Length: 177
Image 1 (cartoon, helix red, strand yellow):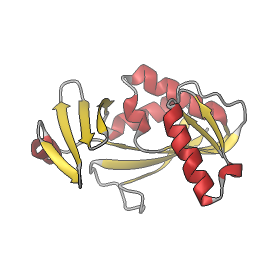
Image 2: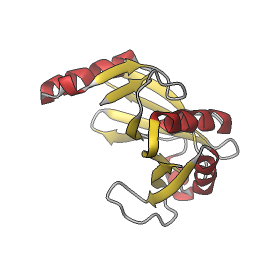
Image 3: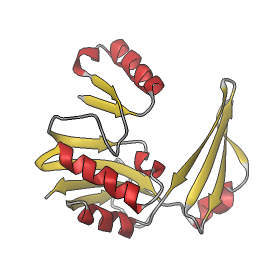
């Protein structure tokens, strides 16, 4: 398994967890950008978990990342990723408020509907961090996938394969054409 992340620290955490699980020899971890992954090999499956595509600012970056994933895939290979589109209710419940998500970990969501961005701040005993996420509607993901050379096979509403009915979360499975 090849793992790519732009954060050497996150790759170090992955390596440690892999050692603890006894699977470190199965991993090849590389620092890189999902728009230009440092991978020459061709594979049958590319996954982009944890809503990573939401770190891409615009359609140009999204297409660059999707095309990069396509280039890694053998013909007929699959791309699997998850994203979200916030609901009006979630925005109203969380906008501008600190909310304890886990004991000792608070989260604040600052939503910009016009720009379709979320500024997410997290603070806890070990420090604080802020990140910006950009979302698009599911129909736009469908179009971007087609433009990047994929056929959408499935779009689920969650990892348990429940049907996507227009909720916030979506899990996409697409095949390289």
